Amino acid sequence: YTISMLNNESDGMKQLVSEAVDIAGNLFRTSVNITLDNTKPNVSILVNNNVLLTISRIVNLVVSANDSAGIDVCRFANEDRAFGGWEACTSAKVWQLSTSAGNKTVVVQALDRAGNVQEANDTIELGLAVPLGPLTVTPTVVQDGDNLTFYYDAGTPGLTALINLTELRKLDN
Image 1: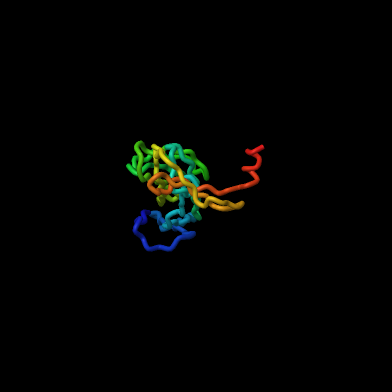
Image 2: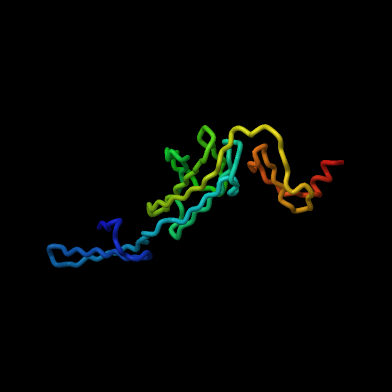
């Protein structure tokens, strides 16, 4: 028995019944229960916990994948979509971005046990060269928990840091 991938059957337990009649008129019946799963898995990905800029090609991925029938495997690619092999889905993975500076995309595909595939992606800006020159800081007076932004010479924001005065006091001693 074959069911089309484009079927409109609802997901869930289905019973397939087979009947055969022999030449003497005897009826033989057997059945098997199967689970029909037409639903793609849920998958999401975050590159470096969703920060916007990195200066390293090595990034950390946070992956979430789930499905009612269970996730089988995942695979990953950069923006060129040259996927690596299928591997066990894990919630954390170290990944290398493609070469050259610019906007980078990491794609994950998750395959469930029924053969349904879903994908997700996240982007990050790769800045391989840090601008040199005067650095200004805003705000000039900070309190614990403030965001501190470093600006390069042309007023371009470079890096934002969260101030933790307790840690700064430790460094001062």
